[in-house]
Image 1: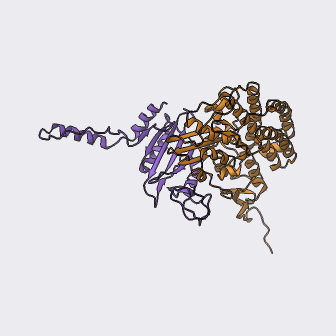
Image 2: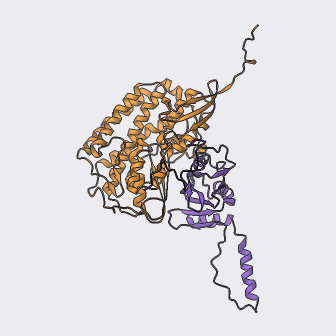
Image 3: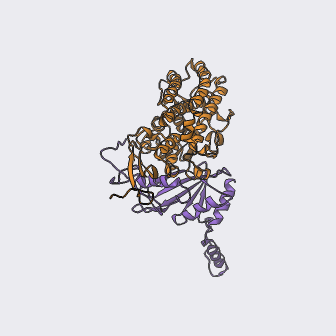
Length: 373
Length: 186
């Protein structure tokens, strides 16, 4: 007679599964090696490098103007902020005085980039937990920002709008009007997002108490951006090391203390409001003046080391340049927010279920080219 | 804390053991009447085993020998006056003769920043102590450095290739790396 499985004689077995590199929930070519016992995750090991292009090595042979273009291809949803980071590094190293007009435009476009990135994240986040409608809502509103960018600089995603010394072109004559139209439109849409997803009971059950990250761990793992702030860790580079026109504006750092998936979600929703407020404060007061100041055709940084920190939609991006005084950096390191945020995934996902891993990963908001630089 | 105060405090953790001997030796030579050689104007002796500089950088830089790296780093994190709890950047660098790592540290309580550099002359088997037991973020960053610079970190919990395949030969971010097929050299 066959033995019937009971609580005591039923043996479970650990096994591996591959999540990715072509998995819809990893949003790119990230491969996770999961060790699971039934539905419970025992170990998560990311396997990287599927789209590594060695941007840091390429930078060692490129000029500083060319490097700006490469940064678009890291975190493509924050392309303008990445461009700005390299330009700020070069400008600070050369001690260039940048016109106020440039600073204000950079900040406006940077914050619009953040909203656009969060729109896409919100759509995809809903889709990951089974709410397909959000995807279309998010993309609908993001399209309006992309249209504004297209009119001003010709590109929708990889913008290359910043150059060392200023901007490539002046803003389009419709820019101010269309941004204001967008602000008015989007202020009615965030409450719609809340009605559709934020207040949904099923969504709460999928996200509350899932993937908890404590403040101590957040700091130790180098978490930044909304991931760190949802754990009560004040890490907004815009507050602590303001750049461009961010000194002139007032905004609240979105902070939560729960550290779970829902808190990370709420932080990003609140950040959209804050970014709208920053754009609103600046859009009527774009100073007149030059949109670019002349630089030498071949930019050479003085000998030394330069570090610039900016806040992208995903967290803290660092540009570390070691210069020997030539036209290319001797060594250039991009400290990307996604790389550090990915390193804590294993820590917060172990012990949870596979479905929770998908929800947790959605709120880490990983962009794989940012990790595979 | 200001950079001067940081330098004084951190420098005092690692006093230079030679400093007393050297000063005794100088005093001794002065007392000998027979010696006509005047003591050459000596370079100021560093009172610490660490080298501090702010030249060519916006931060205070510390250069530490590989043997003192782990002790210094755990002190920087645990001491309440410094409490550098946020390692925001860890970069491998190939300086030509030396290989090494640059650590950018910030304190989330005091909001001061510091840079620690460690270099090793051994290009065949460069080995440094891991700091991943001090800051968890270092685990991934050190794997990246291992992958691209070939620096081994002792006591690292999971040191293996992160981006490249296991059978990859060489370390691409080193300055002497060559790849005849894929590399474009201008």
